[in-house]
Image (cartoon, rainbow, N blue to C red; front, side, top):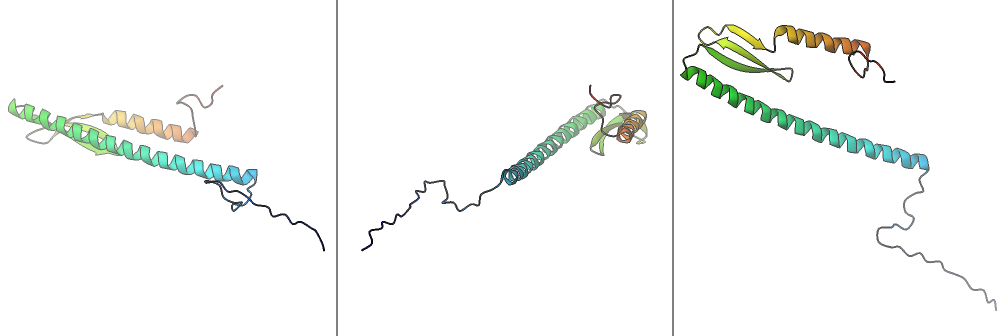
Length: 140
C-alpha cells in the first residue's frame, strides 16, 4: 500500500478581494489605467466648472438686467431723454446709452476703440503662440 499524502491547498478570500480573478497587470498597464482615470476626473471637474461658470453668468445677466430696468425707470420718472440697453456679444456685456425718443446711440461702453484694441491683442497673442504673458515668451 502506498502511503502518500496528498495536500490540498486552500485559499481564503476576504471581503473586498478576488480570488486571483483579475489578471496580473504590468506597471505600464497600471500607469495607463491611472492616467485614463485621472483624465476622466479632470474632464468631470472641467464640466462641473463650466456649468458653475454658466450659472454665474446667468445670475450676473439677471442682476444686470434688473439694475438696468430700475435705472431706466428712474430716468423715465425724472423725465430724462436717455435709456440704457445691455447687449451680450461673444459672451461679453456691452452697455449702450441711447436717446429715448430717437433711439440714437449716445455712448457705448466699452467703446469701439477698446474692443478693437482687445481684438488686436488677442490676435497678437495667437500669432506668437503659447505665451506666459504679453511681452514675455518664456520663464527663466
